[in-house]
Image 1 (cartoon, rainbow, N blue to C red):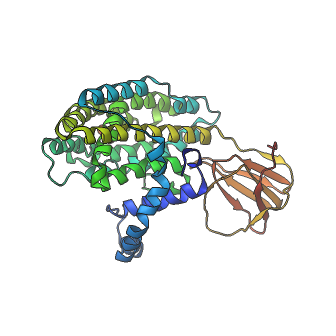
Image 2 (cartoon, rainbow, N blue to C red):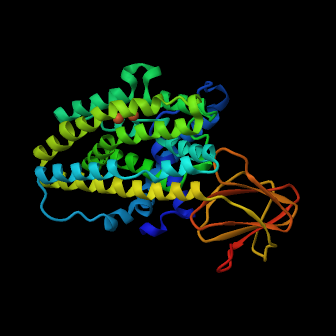
Length: 392
Ligand SMILES: [Fe+2]
Ligand SMILES: [Fe+2]
């Protein structure tokens, strides 16, 4: 998969599949008790599913992450000084860059929908925060193992549920009227954001990716504090006092420390101890995470900026979309036109906010790369076709 093909329907499906593989390695229990969901619980964790997943996983990982091998090139001789210079420059570049996603939310004509589209993406990690990190707590790798644990216990609120970062995220979601259960907004995850989350599962599951993980994690922890401080401002401007910003505020504070700890107590000591190979891998991790972050930002920005409109234009054939099926979303592989021949339809393109309703003789254009779901009205005739060149 090459970089420009990243945001597509197969990319969405592959990333969803990978997310299920990885998450079946962690425990999820329904917050209202197991009783009503025991069958689903047993099904999700059954041995046969795990075996099938294990067989398919390497292939799907190659499909999703294979492009990183050529997109990120790390060459030359690296020592700890070069690593320090590199990570410092990467952090500085990122923290001093402008924040187009936050600006787009503030300037959106529908800022809540835009903000909530972002919160739904953040929920991928936010509601299970530090699960990937927990995958490297075991084993024996010296003083750095204990340094990693120090960061981990902060993420877990020092064993206090109310202070756990995932609890703070759930409160953020509730305060803006969003659902706080993992994967409630499953259909509205953008492929690039699932991929960013999957990356951290991948590199913490594979022991030989450990140094990449440390590179990527250290880079992120060291850039989080100012980004989360900026998020508080943006979300305050959208929701006023109603929003519970403790999730952002906590990161604006604690990641000042985590950034320093991850760079100076983990990254650099590991480089000194384990040498050129480890250093090169850590640099690769930094660059892979930067690249995935850029792709995620572009994808989210495009989703936020997209304002679908119904126009009076009849469809010209195309694939019929049958009413009554289960709700599903997909990513447009090409510029696409959804047309109502008879009856009506709804177009969904964000986790919250009303869908766009359009009727007979009307159509909506979905630009390439955008995530959407169509619900045809009962008894309606709705079609999907490729947009003709130069139409809108
Ligand atoms: Fe955190
Ligand atoms: Fe942190």
